[in-house]
View 1 (cartoon, one colour):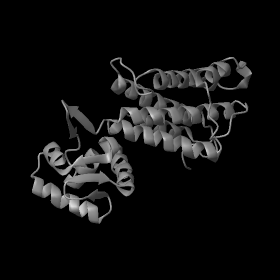
View 2 (tube, rainbow, N blue to C red):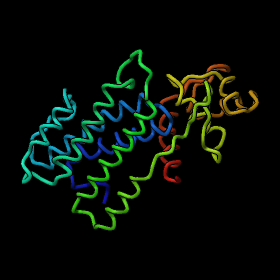
View 3 (cartoon, one colour):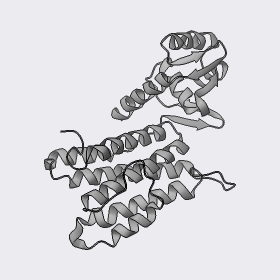
Length: 251
């Protein structure tokens, strides 16, 4: 059985799992701002799942929840007979904290304060893992051993795949190929754009070799390469999702 299938409606289950996967991908690639956006999506869908399980009405997807923290507090006021304590109290409190981190810190909006985006993103991905694990644990349609295995798997930390050393990004995937490292580095850049010269420097490779690999990636439509500037294509972005999924499964 697919994860949480039958526990919540499909129109909530599918985007919930997609938002969780997106959040873990962006965190692994050290894109804290985008991880914050995905955490916001996850929280809004997860609170709808909670409302559904407690027999409460919830706004349709596509309708923004203006104040998720207030929604979470309202859930906490429901009587004990409404449902499990985790659904009434614990999960709403975690989702409320996620919403506050997302909206009140640097990843939510520009500001002059020193940001804690990396630590915030780590908190968000850990919280989302915990919320999803709680849903799995509460899903009585799953045998206990299966639920426990899924919860244990979700509890494993996501290791970042990119580390910034000064102003230089480094891919932390020692066994990966050069094409993979180049795609990961491109995805890590604003707009998915970088120069071939920078990519060569970041990967500590000769420019000629990097150019050869980029031309091959261009022929595969993973990048657009004009001889100097490289742009990650949408197909290349999809390939990144596969790369991150493979890398995190091997942790």
